[in-house]
Image (tube, rainbow, N blue to C red; front, side, top):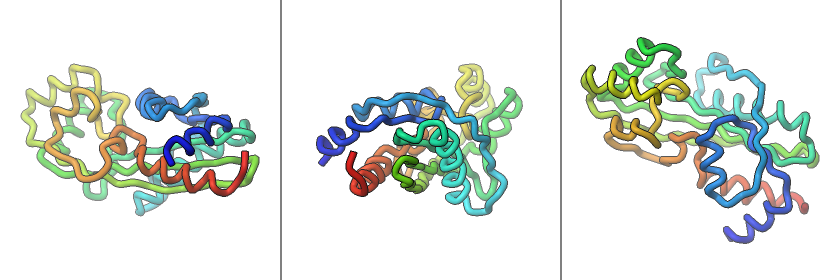
Length: 202
């Protein structure tokens, strides 16, 4: 089934609507040929109290913005947020903000939500889904937090850490999809693509 799906997708112009180097590397690892067209749609994390609804809406908006200009292409888009309790942890802009964020996550279990969107405007088809992974941080000393901040990793990542980098040293364990925490839940994406491609012939 895997080879059949990849062969089917080879006949489609695929566009990743994201500038994230982590999503690029993950998608490339599947052996797919695709182009990158970053979306200019703004992320809005304040409209809903349902976190899955937030990431699905943002993922869809990102994809739609690119699909309008590339109707002949299959658009893959995503949105990821980190949540502790009811608080969304964004991307820290300063060292002090990164410190406060990581101090808050220290010794706690938080959730990472990623919304996935597939859009093929030519066929007027869309698909949406969301994945949640629980991540448990070990207790961190202030010295450890500052040492991690000094690596420069926190500043372009939701929650202020990258589990695929030195941020892995902060994590005590996870429950769910690891790749979701990186930014693109690959197994769920594959099942979405498998179902999506059944509905039309390319």
